[in-house]
Length: 509
Image (cartoon, rainbow, N blue to C red; front, side, top):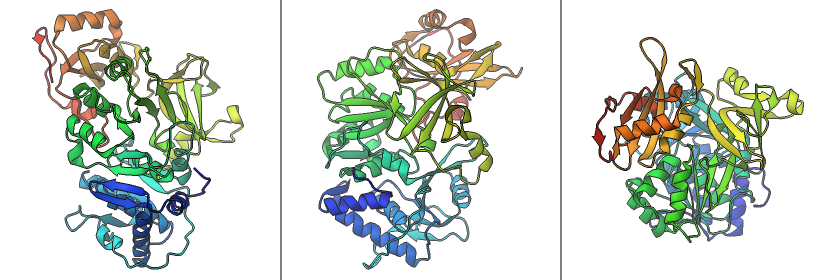
């Protein structure tokens, strides 16, 4: 990719290079790069005519679609910041995001779109796209706050992460993925999920095609597998949970793709090995990716070799223009093999948390003892280890760490041991306080094969010390997910399933 300072300039460069190439595909609708330029330009002119000014925030509340791509690019061409909204989220959450972000307008699909706070106009996407042709003056774009993605906050209210152009542009640099003109990238994430920055912008920055998948194509593993083959998708990102669900049902579901990025939660080594056995001789490359929204979607990556034989899949090495250090005790670099917190820096670092200066100062820090305070670093809260070859492996969260019976415990370590049993397909270990205010470990299992309680109990006794054994184990049909496809622990804790007792059980799915 040629050097460009802004996302808009880079995409317009692709328009000049290959105007008739396919930019966005949704069903039978094919939008060329020239068509994308015209429609996004119409949106920009429409927004400016409505009084939107550079630097202001515009919330976009549209379903995954070709219109969404045009509107987001149009907002950026108008010099405004895109605030990603999920139309399916609770009204109270949407209202908080609109108000907290300072959005001056909300772009919606039609008259049936969700309501907005009083005084904030709703602009229909169709009307913006139909704005008459005309000149569009060059606008100085704010590069530091291009998008605002809202994530769960420690206060219980969503917090806005301000993402800039540089973090998106670096994902399109060579050296970590295979990019080529015409490559077809799947767009299947929730529009308010930061994976959108990879699925939409990286193909458009590299001369590829963004293939939008509809909700009906994601309803079952079979439909997704058919969509991948039918649309010719060769590059895609899926959450770990979705990957597991799909390949458990259809082992060769991703075999027609060239590179499949998997991330969001820890990958199970045994499942990856089984996938490569089931797809032996194929050309698909699996890549484990890691990254918080605060570092613009992806920060580390690890291409997984077909002969991978480990228990833990590394999250690997930094992306281009990304720095990573392991900090022990908050004041020194960790040694190889030592458990430490991961700090990230570089072009992908978010500018701040919107309207949260204290939390910004707490998480985005300087390390004077390391680099004389030259760079900003993001404290991820993730515990990792680095091996002698420099590869980093995920080990847990600092904020999931609990004390049980006086011992420090990372629930992810318990999960790893429980998942090692061949009958256990998925597992989540949650914590809660009992009436005595002591932490308890609760294991929620999804079984793939019949399993006797006695066999499970023996496995637990053989793999976990007494202080790490779950107080209660619950069998569930599936692990509930939130809108971004991650496990919803609060829903698990409220599911009301009685603890597993000493009886034989069949496949729970």
